[in-house]
Length: 82
Image 1 (tube, rainbow, N blue to C red):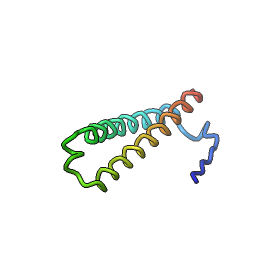
Image 2 (image 1 turned 45 degrees about the vertical axis):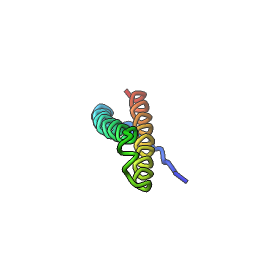
Image 3 (image 1 turned 120 degrees about the vertical axis):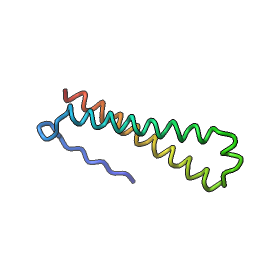
């Protein structure tokens, strides 16, 4: 399964700089997510694309959603440091 290690980072990172970095990553991934969501809701794509391609795109969408959720949690935790 997935293992997460949690370490206190106070004093080791700059929370403001890390927040800016995470927000930038969230913005980028949100854009990718929206683009992929549009692609998967396009009837033309779904009608013409091979099943394996559609499944890969759906898996990518799910992975992006998981990553976005993780980044949002990290941002919330950073807010607790400031």
